[in-house]
Amino acid sequence: MKKINNKENKNRRDFIKKTTISIGSLIVLPSNVLFAKKEIRDSSGKVIQKAVVLPNDKVNLACCGIGNRGTSVVRDLYATGAANVIALCDINMGGKKTLKTMGIHKKANRYQDFRAMFNEMGDQIDAVSVATPDFSHFPITVLAMSLGKHVYVEKPLTRTFDESEMLIRAAKKFNVATQMGNQGHCQDNYYQFKTWVEKGVIKDVKKITAHMNGRRRWHGWNTQMKKFPVGGKVPKTLDWDAWHVAYPYHDFHKDFIDGQWRCWYAFGNGALGDWGAHIMDGFHQFLDLGLPEKIQPKQLLGHNNLFYPQSSTLAFYFPKRGEMPKVKVTWQDGVENLPEVPENYQDIEVDTGAKTNKGMVIPKKIKPGKVIYGKDLTFKGGSHSRTLSILPDENAKDVQNNLPEYHKSETNHFMNFINACRGLENTLSPFEVSAPLSQVFCLGTIAQQLNQTILFDRQTKTITNNDLANQLLKGYPPRNGWEEFYKLA
Image (cartoon, rainbow, N blue to C red; front, side):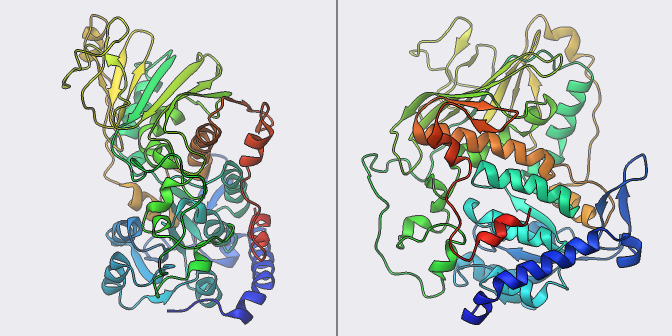
């Protein structure tokens, strides 16, 4: 395995400046001169995305984060049959799943530092997957994009609002294929929702409930915790300093690694960022929600300044968009924080002792999903690629028998990305779509962390009623030596 040594570390700034200038100069030249490879153009003939790989070629893929969730991402990208895994990078080269991935791709070069990987193999890499902790997505992704590499990034896209904003700019600037890993966005849920909105089946939506009520890693923790835990021996195969990337250094503890980073405001986006991308993606895009103007914590059980609540109820208020009315989206997580659903919801066991509004019930248990309240129809849906169904009532009878057909795609989320790298199609969850969705989650986590209602100006993209909340849009200032990454977009 290879990592950045002290001399390489001192030269990193020059490397970033040099490669950025180089890629920037390439972008202004015709791609047929540079690559002689296909481009994706719009109806006017304008190039909207470079293709770095010929349509019949395999994509040379570098994978950052190859243990835990990264194991599945590498597997699924490779399973397309159209990718060569040529480089593997992970901050802990001794993890059980990391070793499994390396055992499958024995010929791939191995790195512990993504900067060393790009230093040595930048000219061989076509695309990069990023399946590292939320807070480390940004520097890997923006550097890869600045070098002209297509990027597949796990959800949520970034830890902070401003990092997503910079990736929106980077996608326009560097003109590469981008895809966030909310896998259901490429299959039936996507096409059904799109068609039902276009054909007027889903219309005049004013209220949505989204929920995920499974047990989370931090449930049961001491909510009186005042500071980060410390202690324990750093695994010999883990580079603990580099684990932090641009974020402030702090002492090691086992509850920061192996997925535990998701528990903390500093490093992850909690249940909302983890599951919101699989539950809210369809209605966020096709109802053109954009960014909310108010986020209100309705209930935070076990609020703590360091890690996420034991349960949360958050209300997101979205303004009118053209002819579409205002929408209130309520997010509920927590094992016992079950949502109210219509009494005709079906396939649930009802808590008969719970107090509810008229016509509503509370289930004893419910799978992750959403309820969408339209003008005449109410819809229920699950997560990922699961499609919507219409709750039965008098208004639904005629509609149920005349539902429009929608496109059935055989291309999954991973093949969609690989095909985009080869110039064969556009990605369905590019950063222009997935970054605003991730920004909704970032705003929600600020409301959770401060336990306060925040008011957001959609035009200036600032929080107007709380200076600290507005600072949290940006997050921590980068550590020394990492500032350059935040200047690339």
